[in-house]
Image 1 (cartoon, protein in one colour):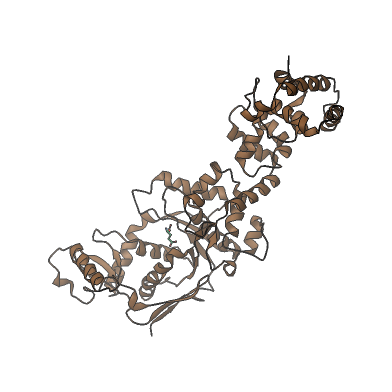
Image 2: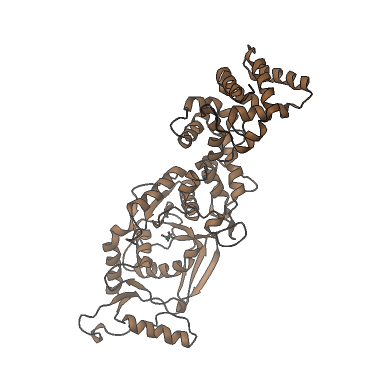
Length: 478
Ligand code: GLU
């Protein structure tokens, strides 16, 4: 029985993985996870993590689309080894392999016309048979074809036995070879098919482990046909270990769509304000686990990541969990770094030094960098402040009268510290028989133009005496 097993083969060779994204205009979150897992696996085993851009679709593969991928990987901190391979530049080599297979009798020329193949499929469909190429040119002599007729090159797949993959995630998966058709390696115009290009590149790059989405599992059986056929022809064709990772679903269990968060990595950074270490950690946990541990540093991830920890079932994308995780990473992040990111969002009027100083207070609540920037915006507002509607409502006549008193009290405060300011206003709220919160709300509206902000004494301290009093006076009565 002809049987192919990918288990254990090449185990003695140093690990080489590859991440092979197609430039489609964005680095989809699921793809980024595949890249992360490939990279981590190589790093964990002290091997090489290679990157190949599958840019054979000339329409979509613009430099811009390629840059989006490179930029996203760089931002996530996935530094791949060696030169990036561009699949489009290797078409000659792909064709060379097809011709070697042809010469060795492991592939053949197929002269079937498009119309003929369409008719074949119609007949199969009508007979409720599986639709696949029927091997009509497999045993025919090419001399039977009309002179100069265009042809494709097809692999001569095995017809009996089965192909077995001991997938490192999916376990043992077998397909009867009779179900694998003689697929095309080279099109009539001489260009390689995706199926050929991928496997030639994987082998030439010396990949020992193919870690990718499980939507490619079916391709593996076909790709193994090429590998097996080439083994007798060229050195270096090893069956790799496959690890097909289950896809990511939305939190409702449906296929991940834009609504669930199927966005590009750049959108997580720019639109959602996620920090790279948070996305790294979240993607790591999405489909991989190590006991109950939730938070992993890069070093821990490298030390602990391995394929047995990858879940067999699909994972669910949970935006809330990502945001919570992001909030924790914001609180742990360096203040000057956060200040720089926030300043970029706030625009040229933002002062990085002031933001850095304010950051310990600002970062306590934000779950993303937009919230953090919004929460910092009050620092840079110019007088008279634009008030939100809610803030305006708080400033009724009574409140404005109290602001006058507050201004008078605070202007004599010699010690502009959180403690002194708090003691001062507490004393006033007790005089009034009011909770401190009642007093603080209109004050917040006057100082920030908003109804939410960091603690009111922090706000006073950060704005400083002069600016605080000016803002209060601008809203106070009379
Ligand atoms: N370029 C393919 C994709 O982006 C991946 C191919 C592979 O990993 O074999 O889906």
